[in-house]
Length: 520
Image (cartoon, rainbow, N blue to C red; front, top):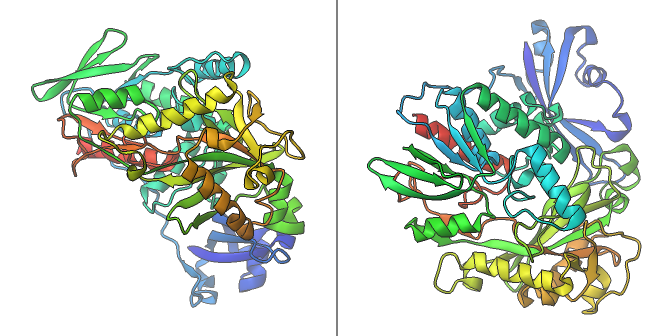
């Protein structure tokens, strides 16, 4: 029989002892009666730096006769060994669904619809992953940006050039299905049990290609380097007009265009799609030396553990929330703009997370009242205004930056110190007031000392603040009903761009659920 053991604590000093041996010692079940041990969740309890624990949830296969030894333990239950599967009903709606965008929402919508025999048509304005990597490299090395194929646009979506984090606050059984699919398409197996799972940009690039190949094998069609230009209602369907001069008729147009497709959002709004402004955030990326963050989290045990992760937040007396976002242990900064003459930063890391620095977004909440004037799209213009201001400081794609010490003293640093910047185009020291709203700058100043009390060393004088991070989420929401359809018949907003997700997992879940509802 299989039992589930929750909150099984292992001292970091015993991390190399086989779990079978530790289970035997704690529960007096002889090893010969323990057939198998599977880790279903792993986290770290580092509240006491001198006594750090690995905390596991375990699935243990034991001889039936030994269950009496542990049946009264509150942390142990009988394990229900039912795999998480979905029902793939035959798609009989008489059309081929069209999916705009092949980010996480589009990928999982396409995967499900393909398995149901719908033969979806996927339209992606960017290139296939291998071509997209070349486009990104060209921008990094020669500062020549392709406005349709870059860090924001292309196969896999914006998350492909990030850390590949799968953390989410959502509690939905289908999330397990999503992680299982990532693994079956090439992601590391430990994402199935880690408390803070991440795929890494290196693995994620292979995963998205493998998902595309499965969809192709089931009859899906892909049009890369092709933009969704507009649509026209046609009875109980819509005609979809593409930049390659194709016109496709469909009853199901799934819109997973991503939060940077400003032209698409504006076209949809002007065509009558109901939208509303929503909150988003702006700020900087903060870089520390990885070893300093590791020590701050784990003390002398840092050398025994993987690179440290943190998640910090505070609510200021001015009403603003300030928080860290998309933390990349052992990572680097990315140039993530999708238009010429702008600066947009983000973080990225590979699976091993073994680079010298760790970085995170350090963001301030922005409400519609901060930018809304008359149009739900005002937030898009607000973002663009400050992205252009950031570019105008150097006019050559170097990002505006400052060191924490000088920033808190309202001065501008003159040279880097112990932390070396990783932004690929280099930095130029400047006052961040030149490229961020005053209330964002003042909120960051108030928050950094507070966050330092939660993670000692966060306010390291040498840490680098690099601007700007402006695209953590969409500033607009495309409204939809309980049937997940827009007010325009046949249009289904999905994922981050229309305002229904905030990361890889939540976007994938949204696309998957919309695909399921369409088949039903």
